[in-house]
Structures are given as C-alpha cells and as structure tokens.
Length: 135
Image (cartoon, rainbow, N blue to C red; front, side, top):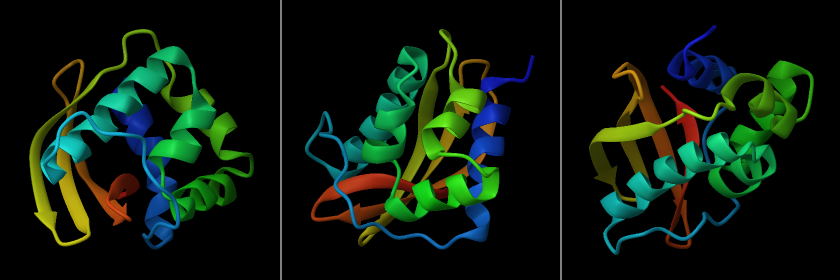
C-alpha cells in the first residue's frame, strides 16, 4: 500500500507542470494570522481526505489552476484523481514550517508516519489561502 504522503506527492506532482495562481476563495481558517490560515488549509485537506470528499478538496482547497492541472495530467476529473490517490481513514498532514511572502506562502508538510513532503505552495486570493502546487 502506498503511503499517504507519497500518494499526496504523486497526486500533486502533476501540478508541477502547471503554474500557480488562484481565482477562488479558500475555506475559512481557524486562526487570524496568515500562518494559521495556511495551516488550516492543510488540516482541512487531511479532514477532507479522511472523509472522502474529493469535491471539497478540488473546489475549496486547491486553486483553479491546480484543479485544472490535476485533471489534465490524470486524464480524469480532479475529484476522481484525488479519490484514487489521497483518501484514507488515517490520513493526517501536519505543517512543520510556514513562510509567508506577500500573497504566496510555502509550507513543509509531514504525514501521519512522520514523512516530510516537498514544499507546498499556497496562493492567496482576497484574503483566503489555497494549495497552488507541490514544489
């Protein structure tokens, strides 16, 4: 069985061929600071993966560019690709480091088995953060 972090990286590696950007608004974040909001997006990703909610991941947590990139690279819809690679009852992602730079941010993410990912890039639109790509 593939690890969830590897699945996360595989799913989003398709995004590397696309640029980043956002025309959408992110889900509400738990805290007031940008770092809290970025961390909340990763928390929402884990919750949505555990819940099997590919639609929410693709429409509320990913930028529109990421959604399109996943669909193009996989040859299917974003929610179907997310379903095939990310859903599991034990999925968790923790943020270990966040750097904010204007309307972009990067975060290092660790899965439930303490495996670190590449940097996750976030983009902000009207004060909301979304996952733009994996670096």
